[in-house]
Picture 1 (spheres, rainbow, N blue to C red):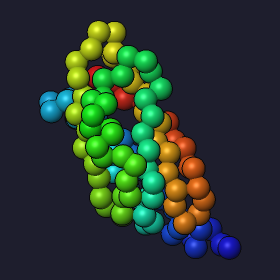
Picture 2: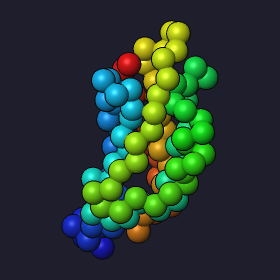
Picture 3: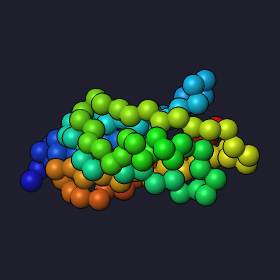
Picture 4: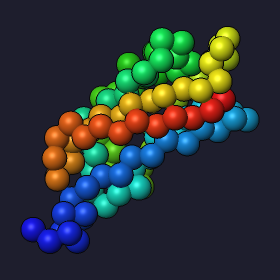
Length: 102
């Protein structure tokens, strides 16, 4: 399989932190659907609302779609690490870590 065909089978998930609204936006910027998307906070002092995670995930994100999650204000939580795990047409259980600063 050539690179272009393989790339068309990949989802590309991104995380953007919005300071003013205190939310993170998880988006699929790739050409393929991200299936069974899961979120794992790698820090014990997570600022994501656990109820939002349970309500929204796991989910499927088609190309150009996104999910918005609320964050809370916490102590000593200037840096957060989010791990996204998903399946796409190129492979299963793809993992990508994102760091965002509050």
